[in-house]
Amino acid sequence: MESNEYITIDIEIKYTNQKNYGDIQIEGNQELDSFQSSTSYKILSNKIKGTFIERQLNKNKGKNYIKMSLQSKQNIITIDSLIDCLELINDPSYDILYTKDNMISYLFAFTICEMNDKKNDLLNKLLYELGESGITYFIQIISTLNETKLKNYVYYLIKHIINKMNGFSGIKYETYDYDNIVQFSISSYLNINLNPFSNPPFTFEDNKIVYNTGNGLTKANLNFIQGINEKLNESFIKFYTYNNYFNVGKILRRKSDENLLTGDDYPHYYELTLENDENITLFAIRESENSNFIISTNINDFSKYGPYYLGEIEVNYWGTLFNIYDNGYEDSIYNKIPKLIFKKRRFLGKIIYETNIMGDYPRFFNIDVVKEDNSFIHLINMKPRWNSKMGCYTLNFYGRVKKASAKNFQIIEKDDEDNILLQHGKVSKNEFNIDFRKPFSPIFAFAISLAAIGKKRVVS
Image (cartoon, rainbow, N blue to C red; front, side):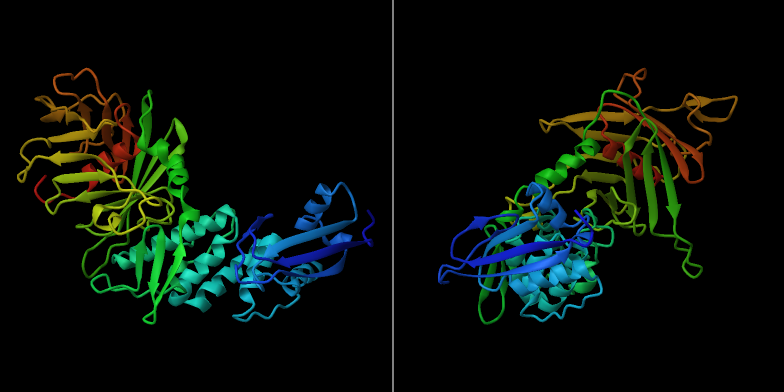
């Protein structure tokens, strides 16, 4: 094919009341009479390399034309919006003038033409223009695009709304990356100022999100995002389950620059890496001395219930009890949201420290690990032995510990000191070694380290 050769694209749009799926899914209006609109467009072949046109031509067995036949609700996709896509392919500087009336049509056109950057920009603009009151309409629009990445987008949009309804911070999207389809901070574009102690405008009814406009209710069905939780959690299984070999790992702690007026060096950041598994890396944050730990798979995003949220460690005031949970929703929220779409959080276990204010003997703590049948495995830390020559309590860490510390310990089953299940020890001021095996998953081993390193009021 010569570079100066033209490609002809025949475009036909049928406005109909029937459901029909091509590359996209569009549901028509029962009250709409069927009719169609069509046109032809020519474009130079040297402009189509790497575009959807080239891919369609390859499917078309080399024939020098493409026929696009779409079925749609009236004006949800227009000939003009598709022609403008082709003009953009021909000339990237081509300017499109958006209005509230045509943005939906262009969103469909950019999806059909696989123009992801333009679709990205338009999603930004569309959500901003529609605002809070247009969210249900926006979700209905996305639901008509049979595209997995946009379903994920709506999934986290709903999570953002749930967070704001319950007084949490919004979902951060700066690091939300599904092949660069959606990369923006939804918190800055969607400023939902919901008061969790009043009647918020959003509620959930079965698997629908409901918005109370004051003049009536608008609803959007969320069934199209069912199953996303399951797929997400499949990618997280490796963090929640143990393996049958000894994991050799390292914990790094990073404190914020200390505030000279208050002496506060929070938030604290933590990272777990494994020498024997490059696919296991976990991160955690503790915002203040009294806050819980949030565990994430992304160093830049610790938003609760966000795309990288793995779980939480709830800490009591005294720093003696650490309850470990996965990334599901707590009961008070779960009872108010669509249960077929989101999951209830699961209790993974707990760590309990004995009170030891004076610090005149080594720390002692118990660990309960929840098994799949909801029974518990009860474990303890091995009691160090007094070494009269060194004048201190000691344990044999086989070269994995470099510094004396109350944070050096080994986990065993009671009365079985020969079977070490986890050991943890200080290497430098902000570096610790951790080695673990069954019954500890990576997230549970990480939680044990965080509990040990974190400040405790009545344990010295």
